[in-house]
Image (cartoon, rainbow, N blue to C red; front, top):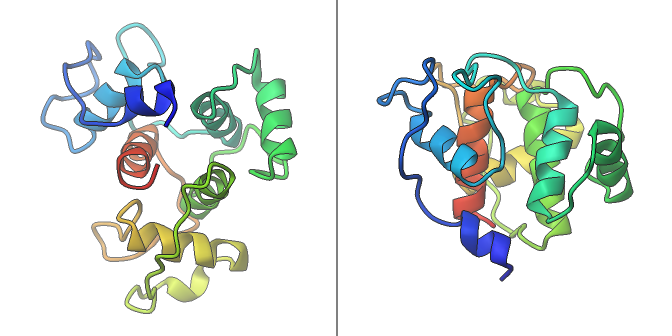
Length: 179
């Protein structure tokens, strides 16, 4: 277990000074953890923009950091993601969808030997048939491990974009439940 792994494992503590993150928001603890762990930061000194989207290149950068690499810029993070089979490197500035995010995390888990054999049956979700082929196994893994499950509407919403708050929650669950 690496130093970074030990440093990130655990519960969130403290609070941020972000004016747009209410202390009782479902994502507050995850954002506190992500910022305190230097996994991510706000969009300014006082805002996190929890409802803003997160791009594919931002996910690449964060995953590279979690693998103890220090890309100097987004181009280096893209190269890292491609070289390690995390992503094909396309659409770097595009907002990441829920199924893309789960697929990126699953590939990262495989790279770091965090992936496990747990899989869930997705048939209970009314939109399971709309999951792209590349994301079926990653979503089965994610649901089985309590990382990403259904939305408040009871759907997977695979093509819906992930917000910064949702990403913080997903990453927090991933790190504490699988990594």
